Image 1 (cartoon, rainbow, N blue to C red):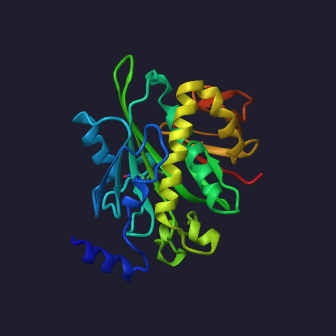
Image 2: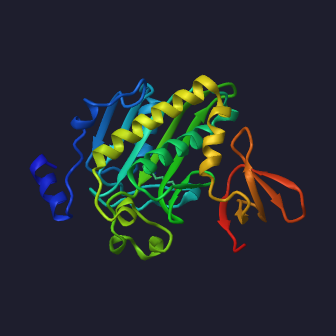
Image 3: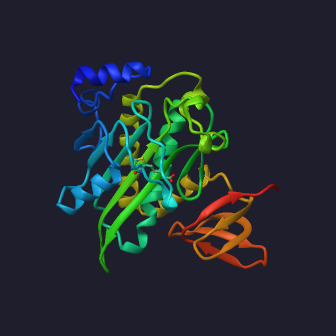
Amino acid sequence: MRANDREKKAAELGNSPLRLDSIQGALATKRLGTKFHYFEEIDSTNSHARRLAETGAPEGEVVIAERQFEGRGRLGRSWESPPYSNLYFSLLLRPALAPVHAPQMTLMAAVALADTVAAFVVEPPAIKWPNDILLQGRKVAGILTESSCDAKRIEFVILGIGVNLNFPRERMPETIRDRATSLMEVGGKSFSRENFLRRLIQDLDRCYGILEDFGFDAIAPRWEAYFALRGRRVRVEMVDEVISGTATGIDGDGALLLEAEDGVLRRVLAGDVIPLGD
Ligand code: BTN
């Protein structure tokens, strides 16, 4: 699509296309945001970032799209990706971590994302394990981490991030309207996607640096400070099991710690956490 047509289409929706040149020039990062691959529309930015990773692209590159027609969420769900209003992007990382520590990347990204959200709205963000960012108890952003590892090392990690920025409730599909929100809904105004993206990539760069230099012990307390469910009764739906209990925190690998109803302390590596009435 030509630039003029893009402007017109975005204006019809009350928005404007992303101006990445205003970000690239002013990005204060050590490693992230070295190159932006911009798409008017794409299947999924994660899928494209994986294609780049597999053909040897270096760490730090960003794939970003105005719209995704196969935007993916965790646990095989789809991610609502309407054009020009929100942010959909994926970062290619090549961390020097053992494969067993790959989940730490998601938790590190959740801290960075919560820090960025906190810089834009007065309302405090919370993290729902492992990677949902909530405002007023509703999901405002999510992270889909995909990685490729061999026995000894992580080959690459794709951090896919979706943020509901200027997404009015009336445009949200009914299937997510009760559970989702956007910065616009909470802040009562629209936000510059460029300012948010610049800040987020800088926060990710900073938190990634902390993880690599000081290890997960330096990230975990920051994650715990945002943890929405500590001490709450929850149900955890895993692939082959559903358990209920009290969420107590995370362990050194980022697993959710749960005191199950039979008193046994369980480690949950993957699943969906649903808060129960206390
Ligand atoms: C979740 O909360 O379930 C994760 C949502 C992740 C959505 C983002 S949007 C950019 C990137 N590309 C995708 O297909 N998914 C992630």
